[in-house]
Image (cartoon, rainbow over all chains, first blue to last red; front, top):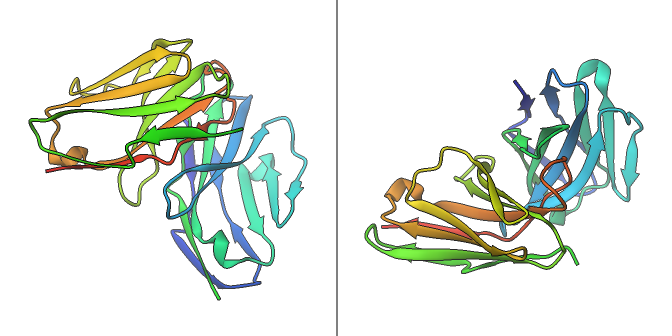
Amino acid sequence: AQKVTQAQTEISVVEKEDVTLDCVYETRDTTYYLFWYKQPPSGELVFLIRRNSFDEQNEISGRYSWNFQKSTSSFNFTITASQVVDSAVYFCALSAEYGNKLVFGAGTILRVKS
Amino acid sequence: DTEVTQTPKHLVMGMTNKKSLKCEQHMGHRAMYWYKQKAKKPPELMFVYSYEKLSINESVPSRFSPECPNSSLLNLHLHALQPEDSALYLCASSQDHREPYEQYFGPGTRLTVT
């Protein structure tokens, strides 16, 4: 069975602080994909990143960075110099090699205060 | 263009009404999805269409009836709903459902059943 755990229910930071959102996953598949989505108050889920299980390179995109560690089954997401517009619910998700059923974590609410 | 559109944005319906939700994408994607999302929960998969054929039905009650008239359109017909069906209904699309491509989501329809 597949499972994604986002232990942080809610995080509050002050603008310009760095913040890391944790994601731990469980799967028996050797090939799998991990995703992060952002859901602002408007409701739409915004795709942020897709990473396959064979690519452990960390990735940076502007203020966003992701740290994938198979040894600890974690795929953490860091926002550098947070902004109020980063306030949203962030979901980590997992999908097996065949089929595209996303298993979502419970989500982390991020509140960035000015 | 990575846009998925959904109409209406909001819908209020009685338990005896019949209504439809609509979703459209013009990215040439061959997989389309319906999700249901309750407040403060992650999205739950309802249906997957692949190449205009129903591929996955996650044991959804028959009062929800999906339809895929063509590769760009996805409908969800609603009939005799219950108050507990009130939720945000999200449509998504991806390149294909046979592999874990990223899914692009629409803004959702907020449904209230009275």
